[in-house]
Length: 115
Image (cartoon, rainbow, N blue to C red; front, side, top):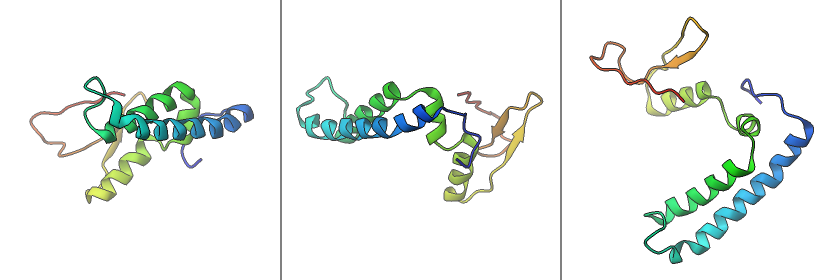
């Protein structure tokens, strides 16, 4: 992995394949069942299918596996900045936390999103 992915065991790495297959199967089932979801389901077809897959992926993989297969926040931020055409601007706080700016640092109001 290109980013600082957590170390996972060989068994956890092998388990990613069936987890992805189960997620794909859930998405297919969601796509087939979406027309019958009724008023209690997701508002759109896309959301129904996406939520089905996401629920399965989150339930099926550990946090370490999820971090292993997904890009880091920094990589995602840099790709987003490139796609939107603005220069990425990141800072490292005293405790080592990385922070990424969207918009101007000189704005009157700033929203901080911790995740």
